Length: 88
Image (cartoon, rainbow, N blue to C red; front, side):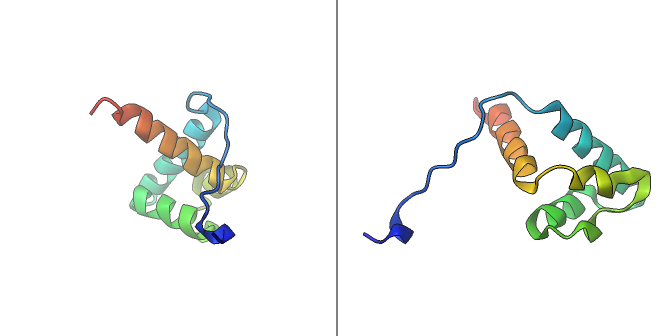
């Protein structure tokens, strides 16, 4: 079996939703809404591409989101979503 066929294990902390991530995402979301953008589309565009041009400079949103690692943002979003939907 080649190494490409093996499942890799990714470890992360089992902490609740990170307040820093939450406050950054909420601030960026608000800045995007104020500028008339679809916040979900813009944040997803940034998370997938890493291109900060998806996030405006308005209210320092671009600098705020760039201070966080994208994988950390994605990790927290997935964790938050799954924890909120595990009883469904």
